[in-house]
Length: 240
Ligand SMILES: NC(=O)C1=CN([C@@H]2O[C@H](COP(=O)(O)OP(=O)(O)OC[C@H]3O[C@@H](n4cnc5c(N)ncnc54)[C@H](O)[C@@H]3O)[C@@H](O)[C@H]2O)[C@@H](O)CC1
Ligand SMILES: [K+]
Image (cartoon, rainbow, N blue to C red):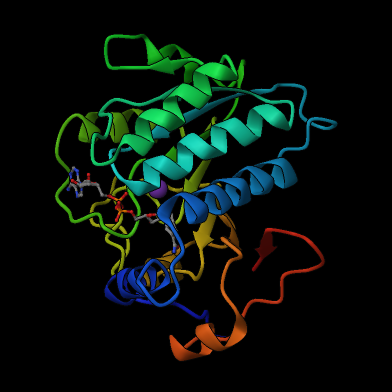
């Protein structure tokens, strides 16, 4: 069966409508559910009972994809993991990002900046996986620094250290897929609300694909051209 996807343009429109005057979700609400679903997907893929490592590096970008990462880190801590957040370019778009960082401090989750040695966490011996919350559906290539170098570092370790990408594998064109031969190959992708077209380019042998962000009624999905996802029970994620 063909994967149901929604283009970057339509995804932005869907988001706008959810947070528009008629429906009235706030960004904070959706981000909380998005971050929770990514944390649940990580727990499903890397249960502590099997993997005897609990350190997780969360790399957060400057926009809402990064915000999902900040929320995800907090839930990972609640699930018993030891997240460390690398947040190189902190957003001042709304005070909410500062509040999310304060919440991380409340949970004693380290938040590193470019001055810190974040690369020491890129060792599979100690670190379970890396959550890639750098860019989502608003990324437009080519990538600007410092993110180009950060992505290269992640690519250099991805054969040993699994990458969990949030919504879109960072650096990929949202509609077209990878834009260069060297690119992030996540071991797991958690698409939010609905997969974006680039996910059709995933190699199923290398990447497990989940959908998360369980926050729309069935008729709204149909309006945007995709079938609602049959999430089981109270799960926030569905493996595709
Ligand atoms: N309905 C949904 O599905 C929801 C989506 N959310 C998340 O929001 C994301 C979209 O968030 P945004 O629209 O803030 O965008 P992104 O987080 O995808 O990226 C925007 C940021 O990246 C920067 N950027 C873009 N291209 C760049 C380049 N080439 N080099 C360097 N920097 C670049 C921009 O300046 C901006 O700061 C989704 O992918 C998803 O993760 C959730 O937070 C809320 C609900
Ligand atoms: K991402």
